[in-house]
Image (tube, rainbow, N blue to C red; front, side, top):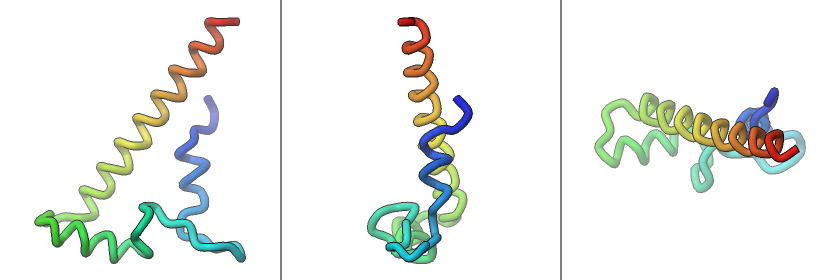
Length: 76
């Protein structure tokens, strides 16, 4: 699959094209607010944790989409 759902979603993060700003994580208006929350949870390196979570989500979504595409091709 050339384009996965997370790539499409992440393309507009932080951009406002005359519309409401798209946030990476719902409920946090900006990255610094998210970092503050993660720090308050006792995490010393919030950027590392956020990066790991985002990478994991992307990998899980990509794997699921690839599996679904493979099933569609097998059914044909």
